[in-house]
Length: 122
Image 1 (tube, one colour):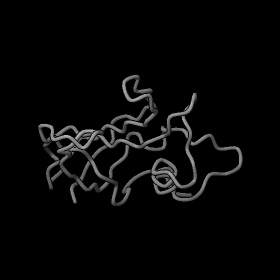
Image 2 (image 1 turned 45 degrees about the vertical axis):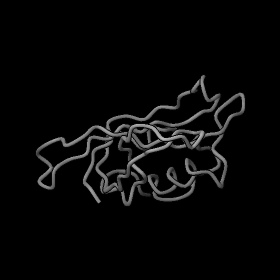
Image 3 (image 1 turned 120 degrees about the horizontal axis):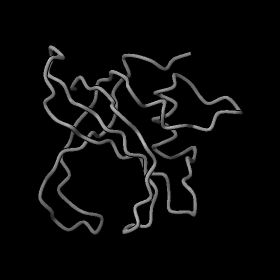
Image 4 (image 1 turned 90 degrees about the vertical axis):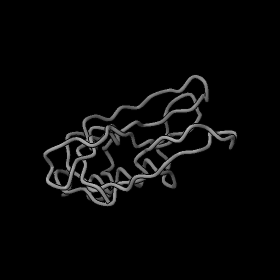
């Protein structure tokens, strides 16, 4: 687990894979929170339809509920802003294969947010 600060989050259409995803950008910090050790991304899948979709079984839905501190109200639009400008504890892992399961040069990504330490909540 590493301390991290979420700088931004946005929903993006990947033209190559023809899918939508939410990219949450994190600054991974040292234990004393004084130094940025890495700039990593958490990728949350949002499907391959015409528009992004946050299905109830998807990872975007679960991450949004965790960041919000509870399920959305009927009027909520599940904005990615719930992820931005917040402190968190994150789990990091290496990616070594592409979407075809072929080996690629390893790079690190945020696997998931263990807990949000600021913002959100009801």
